[in-house]
Length: 376
Image (cartoon, rainbow, N blue to C red; front, side):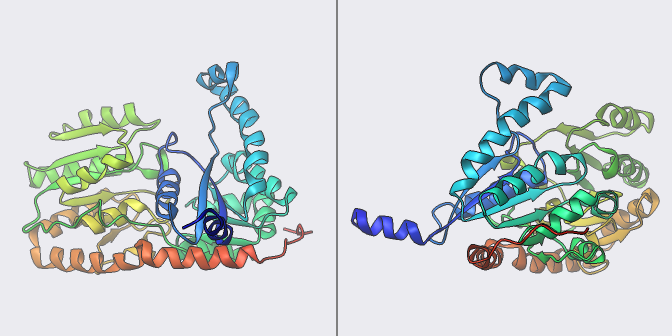
């Protein structure tokens, strides 16, 4: 292909700036953004690049990121110039969004700069705290009504947005079926995995209490906790207080290495009080782990109780333990849940998700800017 043909090919691609956390902020947003960027790499239809919400500040400002309150200031001083430089060359601005204060620090500046340049914005809102956040924040409601499109990963968030008069469409998370390879476990062994960070809304303490009951019935049971967070010391103390054995605190694990923990487990357990559409459950599905979860937020949209896994009420460690013991005692039920869960992964594979994102980008590249709403 000669140089003129190459330039013509490049012109036809939609240029998408993806504003999201880099992998330096390990979490669901960073993982999904990374997967999306990797899939768009060398795609003939889209040229996408990351605009990190956590850029490394230049020069002397770099040292300020070690200081708790100055970290935010230093990051913002680097973030705004980055937005001004990178968003001007995009056809579409794809903004990943969480809630509360982080919404003001990352998505809102990206929307303001995109609007300054007349660029269409898709807000990819991903927080299970949406009901409370949108109730409290007029700024968030105003912003979500101002952007050209809103995309959410679950029917749960789609319903929350609708309750506030905000239009959205569901584009699910991506699961890497190659990395998280299916393995048949028959019968299930009591090897249990949790991959939720140690923050209050994930209620990992409930997981430990459920495991305590399981281990009273199955002394050989093991639990691996992958994650970190503000409650780490409390959770270790609780594990000691309960006299738990065979518990491994694996700490923070890089996304590229996470597959091994699912491969080594038989049952995936999570007990959050708030949630959206956890990629961790999809990874468990793809890997062949049986799933037990609380029915928090958007979880029931991807896990139908008795079909893809077993759901229990939030905070109910006794029911969670009973569900695990039921799986261990009923191989036919476990096989049914695992097989149905694997079948459900088709809609989370790149071939399906790509078509949805591409259609949205194509619509946005032709869209006219939406004027700022007068009401929220």
